[in-house]
Length: 322
Length: 193
Ligand code: SF4
Ligand code: FES
Ligand code: FES
Image (cartoon, rainbow over the protein chains, first blue to last red):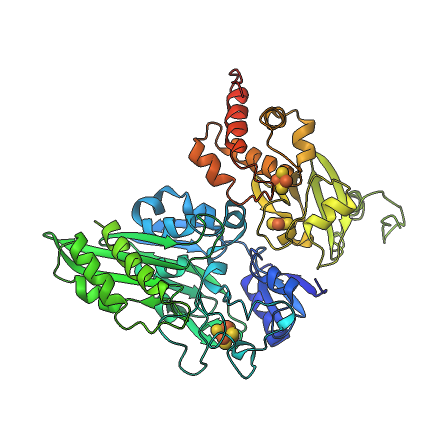
């Protein structure tokens, strides 16, 4: 790893000031499990001159339930979320998403803030030393379109960029299904508006903005998370799905269903939500909702298999809410 | 160069002693700690080290402290062979910046062996290694599990160790060794192979 300046921020203000001082030449480090890999492989469009460590900021590592809202500090480790009884009980989609992320060690290091801010895994993008200077690095083309796109988007590319790299987070769809709000150093953003695709960016965050807390309203209904990956542990999802379903008199009154790893951002399956409204949760209705979710899919040459998996993930997530 | 008091030029063998001296004798605020100076408690021993920002905890433990039980397979956080227990958590030392570990308490395979933890014996008994390169990482991860969960189920053991890779394919042996170590820790008898 090439060297860099290192700053231990003692407060949020100190961190923001440091980020402003370096502009685009600094990176935030929390768990470091995504960032250090990118620095070792030198795949960042520009190698950071400084790392701003936010683990030294007090008060960002907490889980609290107050007045019907669950607050999770951005520095809370994924493992602590996965084993928290309140979250397992009241917000099972999130507990399960955290539990299914990476491996024990990475969950002990990785934070929830970092998990939603993580970078894409496209293998052209991640290839060492920026061998493929693609659109997401400010280059001229996407290598996945004519290349090996077995793990790329089945719902088209991002509108302006033509990039087909999927968003790899497990917790992101759970937070969207649970209708979470992301608090940053300067504003509050709905989880579903948090993700955005542009050069070297996966979120709407400004360069000097830091995620501080996740807030989740107590769900009216039940929630569930399912994941399909090649191995049970360590792997990123091929497809995952989170659902939150409210049922009254055996009929679904509200549903929020979100797929991930199928599109450049977490993909809210509104067609599946509509398909479930007024219906009972059963095998046939969940299957129909799954089919509705992927009715607009436009797979690439090597990833049509993901359509079938996405359909099944939607179905299982819904059945998981029964 | 040993730390020197800027007020009276007395020398000290550790920065902390100089700090205490300045506060006590000169009623002043201690000088800020030099950047990159870290204090580590490794296997019960204290070390004070000066590190560059880009140095990982792996490099410090393996190359500078000479504790070679910590192994590097992947250097990317994908295999678990570089696992150490830091402040009670099993973490990957290859993906940890040493400069961020100031005042951490760390345990490595060497410490676990020195403490005669039953895992060492059960790992040998159950032949959990072929080449042995991944083994310290497994042992350290298993120790972290048993510290928190003294009586894990087989499923819990498998899950805890799922981030440790073994190129030789010793996987089936590990749950047996960990389960037996758990039994021994609770004062029970070890089973047969
Ligand atoms: S899918 Fe996106 S990240 Fe991958 S090569 Fe194409 S433009 Fe780059
Ligand atoms: S060497 Fe650290 S995880 Fe593989
Ligand atoms: S024993 Fe050889 S890698 Fe595990």
